Image (cartoon, rainbow, N blue to C red; front, side, top):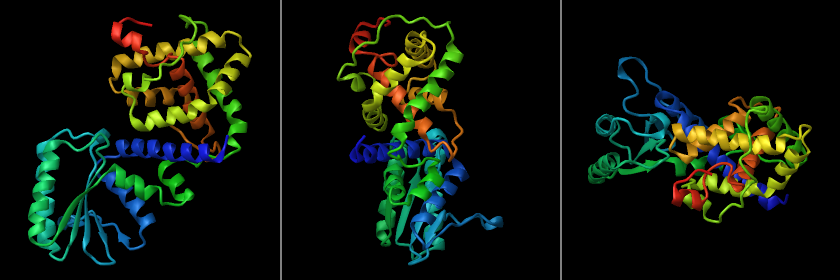
Length: 321
């Protein structure tokens, strides 16, 4: 595994981990996460906490170097706006508060975790604030997932690990990958046992399968990069102590995918749930994230062989695999 591959995988993994973190944080937790990022990136950043009846006076962050850059944080649940009227009214109220309490402010950011994009009502409201701000020399803009990503990628490896719970990829991970894959296979065999029957040999992945299944860009990149190690996954499955693994593991993923598809329409959510099956939610520094990496390799392997997600023939015909 060359250094270019490792660097590309690290960057993609950070993006996926950050997106998951943004989705999982809402309300005060999102504001706290934003403050942790900015405190590590900018020495002159000071978080503002609500205190007593005065609250935070509409200020969720302030650069004290010039005292003129202010952030309003909005953390939506799972990265989606539920009540647009409430959000738009809060934007207007907090912006008006800033203009009164901090007349010298020159930059105001609507800081959010809307990973799927900003809805039109919110965009229009921020545009209204931009017009109002322009009259007094205040610049109004969005601070969303892309700017979060830019800030996080400038952090030290230690800070990234603290914030996102991940460690950057190490070259020696490749040496430990088979062991981690075997642990995943063992877990699947314990869950599935002989109750899952393979429905046929793996299929060759169509080149356009990402498009057919609307796989989001970050997962598309991650699966593509992890696919380089798919031969290791197949080798581990073939060499596993239980000969039934060669049929049981692929069949297990096919069955689990079919179940998840009934509950989630989002390809991203399905991939996240499949990853949880293999990796779980607990991350330890001791594991050096090798299990997470192995999980991505296994997902890429099952994606390539069409055990998870559909090929063109299934989608166009509407028939099951």
